[in-house]
Image 1: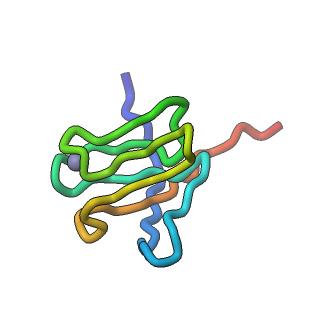
Image 2: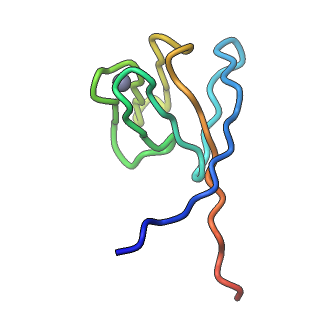
Length: 80
Ligand SMILES: [Zn+2]
């Protein structure tokens, strides 16, 4: 099984402006190393609960924003 090569582009996190969310945006917790999607199907949190996403309220809470990173993944879309 080949590892899926992904292009990660890190974005600045500005808690004052709210956290960006998108289908190709992910959050990486620098405390526990978990990576969670910014638009999960269900409530999600990283292992250490530094990053918590509440889908019902479309709310994202990051306890320590300096210990988290946001990145977008550009996937190669099939030509067609
Ligand atoms: Zn964590």
